[in-house]
Length: 244
Image 1 (cartoon, rainbow, N blue to C red):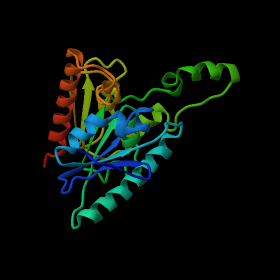
Image 2 (cartoon, one colour):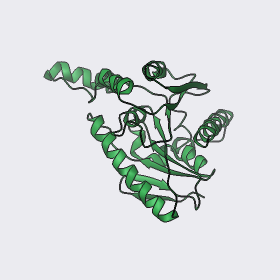
Image 3 (cartoon, rainbow, N blue to C red):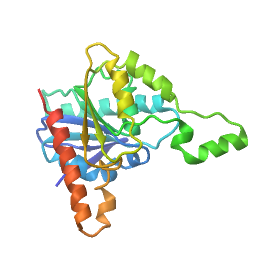
Image 4 (cartoon, helix red, strand yellow):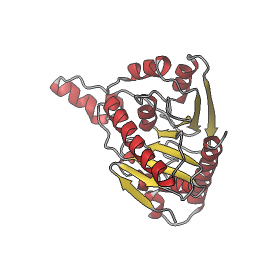
């Protein structure tokens, strides 16, 4: 059974001799408690002898600040893990879901310290599209609030500054808010890009939908179908993360 520990804002699972390290940032609000929201996904990966570091955060408007904070916290946890194992260093596989993709892609090292990136259900909407009440408030009190970097600035950073060539972008077939196609276009502008897209069965919440929500449901055909979706996702991530 997986044993979670928390180091500052990062939830960790450390197998005794991990073959790889995954650094995970979840989506907006799901990322507050990733050990719960993404429980089955992350524990499924840890059962395959992969160390897990999952960053916990409350979404805000300054995404660059949060990306910097996540990068620093991951570095601290990685140092602690390597010290515990001894004579072992990891080039982590970074995984983001939804907003978590953006936070990884604008990391201050621009992907330099990672082995690869796996993006699940990337989206990059404006603030008033992501926060339903914001548009109405902006009209009433005459404010101009936008994420930093803005959606346009984010795509410029990815195409001009992000340097990791190995990116696996996963799109779920019933995800109506996915913007993976847009992300791929900007990644492929870069020289020596090696990004690929695959489509899996599921929807925007597939990475998280077998967490706490299913604990409240009876076993049913629908839940088994969702478990199969998650199993396929785990196998796909594992295969890509452990490639030489």
